[in-house]
Image (tube, rainbow, N blue to C red; front, side):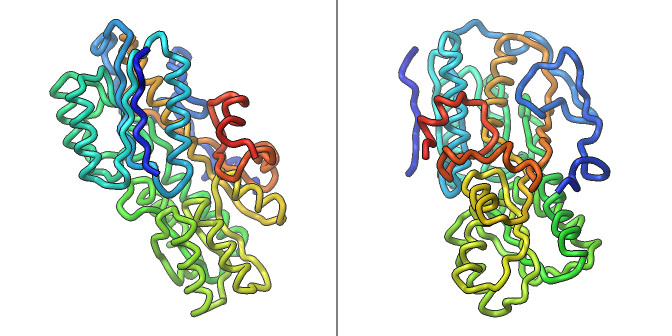
Length: 362
């Protein structure tokens, strides 16, 4: 196998009912991409068998929106690296590009991968538009593209594997409505401005909040950053310490808010929504907090690679896939929290335990 290029820069309320998992198509002969991942509902054509079939070993390209901010971005890269290592007999070369949260760089990265004559490209877009031109150029060059971890403003991709971020934001908002008895002041901290995941999570939350009795007193972008969200929470608490709950769409922001409130001497910690980050789950567990942690698996990158492999193998595959795990709640926290791993680990994973310990041993 040729050298691979890895460019790096620095409550049971969800169990059923309106927020349970709807009847997604589960065909018996469906390709297994990832647990809790199925062909999406509605119109969902199948890519013709053999359309992109190519004898291996293959050259695979990966355009990522940026290894920056949240450790989730790094783990998506680790998960993909591991999946490539499992398929080294079939993959001759793996080219990874990080756009460093720069839309122009993502455009250039995809163009470079096309110039490298890769056999398939998996893409985690920075914005809905940052990968569009690249996807179109890849299509013109006959290169299949698999989009994951964010929507794009084009239907010219070959396959997409997406988390249900509308559901993600909605269940967190419903958690606060139920926990607070549908009354009180709430802060909303969003992720990276313009990112499709943040847009969908916020839209899902507002569907619930707009019909509730909760008062949203501040909405700001914490950019999925601990430091940014901590500064925001410090400022908000100084101006008005009366906060009943906090909705954040990223666990690093949850940690920033928690530390800001504790350092400010808050007498009680309001419910703060979280995510499946081990550092957040550690605090949740050790400090007996009440929270909810919707799951966005870092291994969506693995699922994207598996879809790309299926295309190159000439297998028929549906174009649209949805990942929708049930969220972590107080009652099942112990099933996901790993006290033996560092705060940087995100659950769940497709990597074996020995690989997790290599990356995340506490």
